[in-house]
Image 1: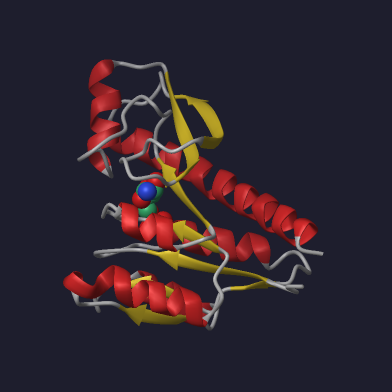
Image 2 (image 1 turned 60 degrees about the vertical axis):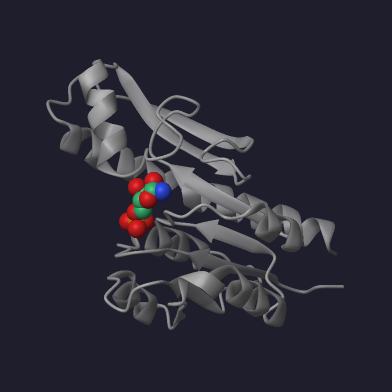
Length: 199
Ligand code: GRF
């Protein structure tokens, strides 16, 4: 029997960490046995570290790209991790990694997948494409991670109207507000389901 759900956040580059903070703030409202023993960064100047400090969460920097997955797998096993939350993680995880980790891996994408997803579609590039296309709505998708970019089964999606936005930056701003609502809700639900099924 397992009495907690153990979650880690996986980030890369100069990760901002706004989703991490929104999730942590949301989870702190409930008396749920959720542990976040550490989060992963790849650069020592990643701003997410300052947010992690506020929650007393250790940042582990995996700097060797060649052994990244091996090193991560060792940590996941050591801390008995059940759920990996990608939050600004730009790399693709290998098939070997996905098969080796027995828990779930989820990601948040700032658009309505399957539109505006795939290799190279991240950050402002997504919102610029949406803006240029003149779409009336955009949104957020949370999905399981598989071995293809942004292509795993969709867990939840939320749409917002963006017809009034006059720039890609404005769209990004509005979409981010929804990310900060949807990701926490999904993670809370997955944690509750996990705890229920491991009673
Ligand atoms: C978010 O926009 C998310 O959709 C994408 O990466 C960004 C991370 O932002 N996957 P933050 O680090 O959570 O602020």
